[in-house]
Image 1 (cartoon, rainbow, N blue to C red):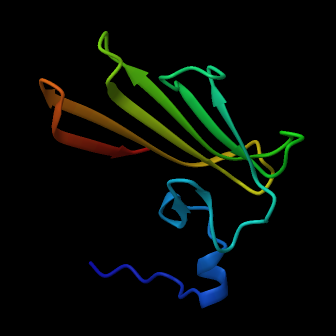
Image 2 (cartoon, rainbow, N blue to C red; image 1 turned 90 degrees about the vertical axis):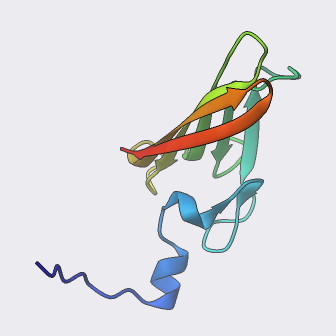
Image 3 (cartoon, rainbow, N blue to C red; image 1 turned 135 degrees about the vertical axis):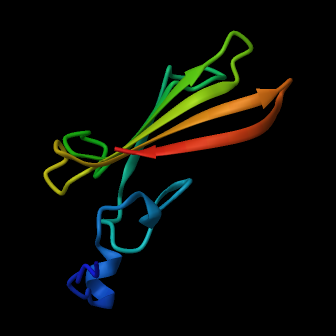
Amino acid sequence: MIVSRPSITTSGHKTLRQLIHFISEGPAGGFVTGAYRETLPAAGPFPLNVTWYTDSGKTQKIVEKIITRNIQQIPTQIHWKMYGTDGITVVEEAIDIIAYSGVFETSRTRTII
């Protein structure tokens, strides 16, 4: 069965709220400038939550990364949440489950929710 999907313009593609459009160190093309990042716990060596907001007022979330760590503080699960333009509605989610041999990552399984 062939499923037709509407085509998207270049400018429309840039503004899509998809995790693929988000670089590891914050928002890039298609997002508002002046974005603000909060890492929790504050000043901790092993972050559990990294959230990007549209500004320092933290009224609208852009993306959130929730990290679960094992006893050695190695990430075993990373849960990504992408928020809609209202900054509240989750529009896309992905969960990575990470396996290790010692401290070396051996596999990663991603589930798109």
